[in-house]
Length: 134
Image (cartoon, rainbow, N blue to C red):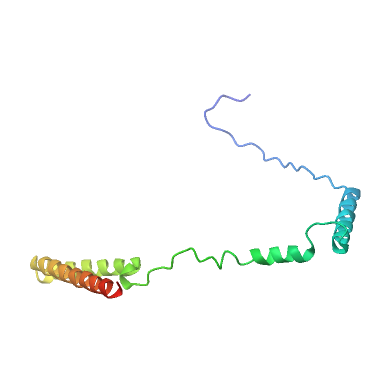
């Protein structure tokens, strides 16, 4: 007798397979029909796709995704890389920590001025580059 429980108990795993039906006569008929259709298409009696048309369509699909040019190329600027930005932030924090230990709170002011100067130079070069390209 089993007592009611809120937990599920493990059941035996059962193996069930549903066999596919194999009919050799039906497969032979399909092969003969396809062969006769191909022969009639090559003779020109039956209109449809010839093997040359099929081969052309097959080769046109091959490599069509790799030759697609709709995706924009990536920007190759040094500052567009997230790894570079992450590295610069890490170095800034390390310099701030060691500077705070050795120099004192004034290092944070110096680093803020240095960051503002660097940003000003970066944006000024970017504006100059935009004016020369336009």
